[in-house]
Image (tube, rainbow, N blue to C red; front, side, top):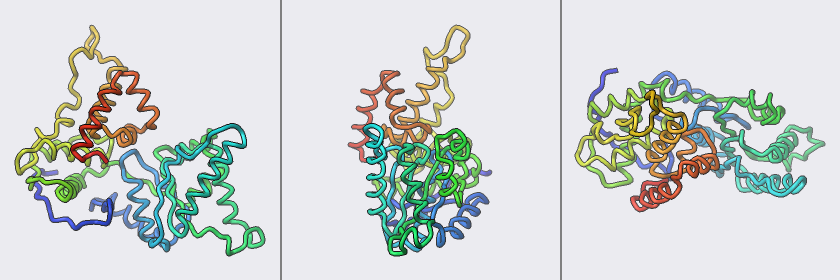
Length: 337
């Protein structure tokens, strides 16, 4: 793909933090057609894809096209549903959380982010709710039917998780009546220039910046990167670049996270010149955390791990204090989200 300087187009203000589904390549064209076809009619959908591909974005697009578009869109991080106490107490806490969420989202859409992390007690209760919706009129009066749509996101293959018992088989079957798979950014590189200019335009609405173009060298760097964190990583890298850029054109030198990718750091190799696995993992974790301006939730999503796992890794590499300082500095610059 030929690289050239990309001028930042004007961008209309969207409601809240709403983000458009950007991209005109074949993969995004198919995705938009699928969302438009499913949106007006769905009751349950599974949205799958790697971390940072935009699963919540797709879920919000489905909600906007649904019959409950005027009602709330409620995000629930499935792994945080209560499962405290012992035996029946865990089940009671999980069912209370789900009942509360359904009440708040009544008439709209309830989005379970990371359904694979939902406690089994919560899965069992959610399955009971879905069973009631499919029961005969004698089993549940029409007036008691739940006016609610559910979307579940996952980074993992739910079929595999169902076969191993991490997801209840029947719950998977009921949720995944429709499944939308989001492509990773490396499989739609043709969209990178458009995505880059779009995100810079959004940043221009949020902060004072004189940046008007993306330089050829910067665009080549963006197009060549593998983007393990997908679109979210691209947005974070560009945010970092805006902080670094002093001129009107964003250059490759303003993207230090990409510029240093793959370079070995002093003291990280053994006598044979081979990096130790623990050092490689720690260095990658710290690089991702830095690219996210210290935001641990976003870093965990990019890495494809839970926040608790990230905390343990940071403690293991004695970086927790430094990360906290970085987070405070980022908040002062008003770029941590």
